Structure formats: structure tokens, C-alpha cells
Image (cartoon, rainbow, N blue to C red; front, side, top):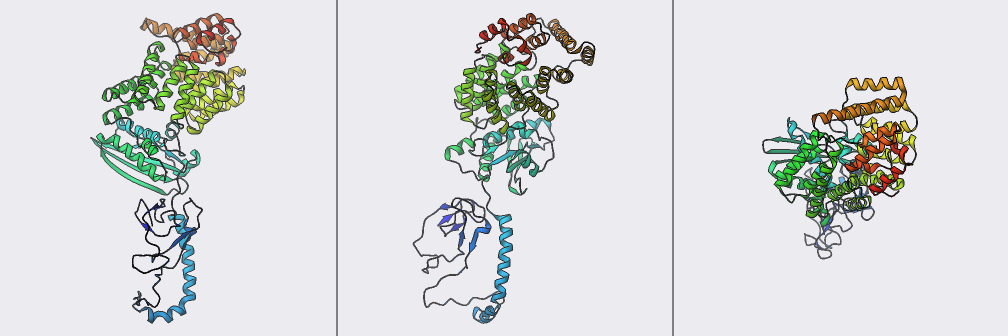
Length: 597
């Protein structure tokens, strides 16, 4: 005997592998004595309908592959079954002659019914195959309160992270699915664009302490709803709710998991709902990537740690925040990077197998310690623990990129793109890796694609401008540089006009000269407001290099090194600095940083 673990239906045909109602794999149950059935009659087959499958071993049978025998009980010799009443009220004996006469017609009708039933049964009731790719779309905040946005975003991100622990399941990363946030798009189109078999939609609403979550899992090819559920919980139950959802969705995807894998999918990093909510608020602001939001993210992560001092993931979030702050605003690297390193190390002290913490530490070793070997070790460990973590591949690609190992860099960044195809940061990094291989036209195409996807992102425009400059396409370089300056630095319209006039009057060199004047004026203004203000030096060094002023370029590069600016890790691969590479001072700086010459 076999039994379906979902609907509990029993089957007595040992050739069946899957439940005919819901497609679940059948479990072996206790076997009856050979030939025994519930009625006590002896027979080689049970008295129920016998269903045979022609599907290959290990595969779920389709409706078309199911062959049904007559539902006939075999009685002992000499025993005649009692006549049964038919729906017409006639006994079997009375209707026997009519039955014989009607047999040919009935056979035709039955054949037609079987054909039609087989078609519709196959289309609508065939057991669901195991899903191998999914996109968890950004949950919709239906609370009418923008302050709850952190919850809808955070629950999406948490579920993506949990489902990523399922082997052989491709889960699209956060950056990619959030590209669709706020857009009306059909499951079929999502499936075509992201190449996924299923999408999960969610709606979140919060009223006081009451939390309502509606989920819907949809087949992208047929647009049929595979499963839907509504959860009503208290906000204090957030941690257990997220664990329950991850396990349920895993089951509905037909994932065959070991006990260890099931534990990883439903794992919670904290038992405190308060700490979890504070962590989600921190990630919400971290993802916005502004000076103000980084400060808020830092506060929320610290509060999450206070609520649960053993919350390793909150320490990893704090490390990510402190490590990125020097890239945004006037945050001194020598102050923030050591704190970031401490937070990452504390996360690993609590949970040595936390992939996010290994990746954070790897990034810090790259951009602050300039320890590329150590960074490679940590990032490889992060990937070993979580092979579906796109940022780990991206940061490992950076390590190889900064080491001028173009082939390995391209291999790793392509893995990141496969996991997170709509990430601005990853697409931008791919362009830089392509350029390192000398394929400048291909790099331009990659940067232009990134700009089209993310027109408000400054970094790809900066890199696109650099490649145009290297090719002598100065009009195009200026166009992109002006947009980048407006997006990143918010310079005044007057300054933009001055830069345009400088280019028209004195060409590209006049444009760069005006740019350095504006940069230095900005720093003087900062010092006037705060004599201890942090003044980043690397970008000014690049501008002087464009002017072919080697002395000033090295003056500011050495300042950048003394301040441990993260961009120093890019010393050997930044296009504007290529002019300096034959100078002995450049080789000395490379030696000080610790990079191979």
C-alpha cells in the first residue's frame, strides 16, 4: 500500500509513484497479505479502480499516461453477485439485454469521453512538476502607511534569502525583482524576462499589532495559481511567521529536501521579533544608499543588536553600512572601516557559517586593508556557504579585477549577473571588467545598457565617460560627466553652465581645468564650515591626472592612501591614472599599498 502525505489517500497499486489528486510523491505504507482486500474476497487485484502509469521511473505521470481498468470485483468461483439497481431503477438482469444492444454506442461515447477527459485532465489536473526557478516579487504595502514599507520590503528580502537555501532552485536576487517594484506586469512577462517558472506575489497590511499577509504562487507559463494562502498574525509573531512561510513555499515548490536543508530554509537568525523588525528597518534604509539613510541604517542595526546581542545578521548589516559610508558623504574611512571590520568579525564569532559576514569581511579586506589574498579567502568561503549570494561573486570579481586578472574577474561577474541580472552595481562592474580586457566598444555597450536601465545612477555614467575619454570621444565624455556630476554632487546650475562654456571655448582640457577649480572651491567651503572636515583626495588626484599634472596627482594620491580611501584599491586599473604608471612614484605607491607590481 502507498499513501499520499498531503491528502492521505491510499493506493494499492505498487506501480503508482505519484498521487493522482495533487501530484505528491507517494510514501510506502504497510502491505496487506497477497490477494487480500477489505471485502475478504481473494483476488490478485484490489476491488478499487486500478491505475497504471506509463511514465518513466522517477517522473510524475501525466493524465495522458494513466490507463484505467474496469472497476470490477473478482468473486470466488460459483458466487454470483447480487443484482444492483441502476439509476433508471431496473435491475442488472432486467437491463442486460439493453446493455448488450447498446454496447457499440457506449464504447464510442466512452472513447470520446476518455479522449476529452484525458486532454482536460492533462491540462488542468496533471501533477505539478518540481519548480526549478522562482522570482519573489516585492510585496505590496497595503497599509496606506509609508512607514510600513520597511516590512513589505524586508519580508520579501527575507523570503528570497530563505529560499536561496534550496538546492537546485534558482531564486532571483533582491536587486533584480525590486526593479519591478510598483510596476504592473503579468506573471507570463516576468517569466519571459527573468526566465523563471514561478512567481510569488505578496500583499502586506498592518493595523496596530495585527499583521495580514496574502500570498499567491503562480505558474508563469500557464498563469494558473499553484497555491495561495492568507496569514493573520500578531506583529510579535513575525519571526515564526517568516519561518513558516519559507517552509510552506518550499513544500509547494515540490522541493525534495533533507532534514538539514529543511532546517536551513526555515532557519531564523533571531528569536526576537523586536530585533527582527529593527533589522528590517536597517536594511530598508541601507538599500536607499544615501548619506542620511546610511546614518539611519546604522542606528537601526545598533538597536537590533541591543535587542538581541547574539543577532549575527544584525552585526553583518552594521558592517555593510559602516563599510559603504566612506563612499557616500564626508565619512572618514580611517574612522568607519575599523568599526566595520569589528562588526563583521563579531558576526562571525557568533555564527562562523554566516555567508553575509564572510562577504562583508572580504569587502573590508579589499577596500581598507588592501589585502586581496585575505579578501579572496573570505569571499570564496561566503560562496561556499551560499552559492546563490550575488554580492559575494561581485566582490570576488572586484578582487580579481583590482589584481588585473581579467579572465577570473569576468567569470565571477558573469555568475553574479546570472543570479542578479537587473542589479545596477553588478552590471556596472561587468562593464569595468570588460574594459580591463581592452574591449572598449563592448564596455561602452555594457555601460550604455546599464544607463538605460538606471538613468539616475551616477557610477555607470562616470565609467562610460572614462571610456569615451580613453577613445578620444570628448563630446560624449563631457556629456556623461556633466550628468554624473549633477547626480552625485548636486552642483549648481551655474557650475554646470561654466563647465559647458569651458569645453566650448578651450576643449576637453579647459573642461577638466574648470572641473578641478570647482572641486577645490567645494573643499575650501567645507573647511570654512568645519576645520576638521574630511576631504576625499582620490577623485581630485584623478582630475589632476587628466590634466597631466603628475606632481599634483601624486600629492593627492598619497593623501588618499594616508586616509585609507577605498578607491586606492583601484589604483592599477583606473583609466585616468594610466598616464602615471610609468613614473617611479606610481610603482612606489603600489609597493606601499601591497599590490604585486
